[in-house]
Image (tube, rainbow, N blue to C red; front, top):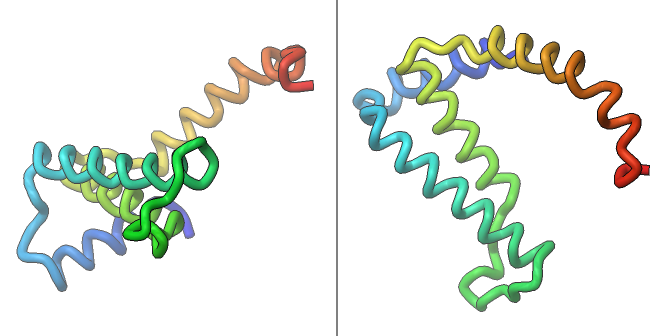
Length: 108
């Protein structure tokens, strides 16, 4: 699914199930919270921390989806077209980083 369609899907969800978007500062705090939950899972699953008993039912996919949802909310309410922005940014990265990564001995 294209990002544009995801933005529309989130907007439809907000209009159908939510009262309205939370304000931008609230959504920024929500995004930070969700990213923290992803970090917690990653640090325990791939890092050196161990899971607590209360962490046993963690769901990385679900938490990443929560991050995406709030990110799409922020884009919608601030008028950002993430599809165009992402496409432009990916093109810029491809042009800037192609040779850099291919010549990086650390990635060999």
